Length: 397
Ligand SMILES: CC(C)(COP(=O)(O)OP(=O)(O)OC[C@H]1O[C@@H](n2cnc3c(N)ncnc32)[C@H](O)[C@@H]1OP(=O)(O)O)[C@@H](O)C(=O)NCCC(=O)NCCS
Image (cartoon, rainbow, N blue to C red; front, side, top):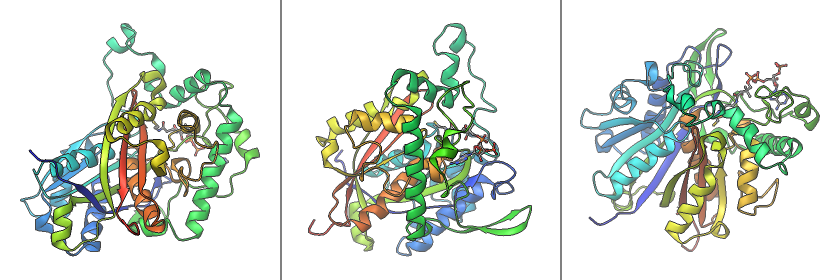
């Protein structure tokens, strides 16, 4: 079977709320957030009629309640896609949305379908991390993993142990940079255009959720220095140098390059290659390193070919170790997360992969000289995922 080119035509997300009662999505269902994203993707791309969408794939880490019942199918029905549109859901924890995109892209590449919507959602308020998980007792009894492996913040503390040269001061400085870059990008209007506003019911009545709740533009190094270290007494990982607990959804419109041409839509980026890889669960933050090496091997490209690197900032320490491995300028390489990252915007687990793609798509639009970009992220229980994209908004292609 011949492989076809897969392009990303558009990506959009809801605002990212704070998880819990104070978050603006507390009374909003996760599947309604997905529906909002699907409808907006179709509204923005009128050449794509609902009946043309053949597959709707959604990632979520918790696959129950308002994220259950095969979200890809339920959200297709709820969004008003015709019954002909198939749908399914996937789970690869934080990389759920990324996996939804690579699943849909694989279908398109193999000719199983022409047009798909793929994304990720996580309502961490309704589904606190691991709350209903029932890990097999063998994990601990047979020492298959240590207890740390099940608490992401502890895996980040383990990384500090493993790389003592990455200090807390460096992690805080990286976190500050993320906040400052995000604040600047917000001010310059780069972020608002990625967000589809959603009218939601809150304690204060109806409000429009059109701006992330997590960013703290006024962050200072001094304030970061003094924060508690909840995962270890006198540890290094704090609420300030970690991503937060958030609610959000992000989705992408994908199709074959041929279909984009046929419909006359402008594809924004082409999927060049992707790879997933596993690492020790206790140091899951290392995941992007082997996944990125693997995708470079598969594509024959290298870090020097990447004009942008959108790395999910689950924890600052994990981002810094990636930068060290690939010899990026620490702590602030202009290619890495130029508009800030998950430490500022938040990390509603499965939605973050598509969020990285959404950022890259807009960065490519503003940098017509840029050719390649990487989206990469770590995954609970020790995995990483990496995708290389080519900028189709380039001058003199
Ligand atoms: C670290 C974590 C436990 C903190 O949770 P939390 O205590 O609910 O976080 P909060 O937002 O309430 O912040 C805690 C405190 O830090 C302060 N804080 C957070 N970020 C700050 C910043 N940038 N500057 C100054 N203060 C900050 C808050 O104001 C709060 O102060 P308070 O206790 O005086 O109210 C939580 O965010 C977490 O688990 N993050 C990791 C998520 C994760 O594992 N994701 C998966 C990755 S693989």
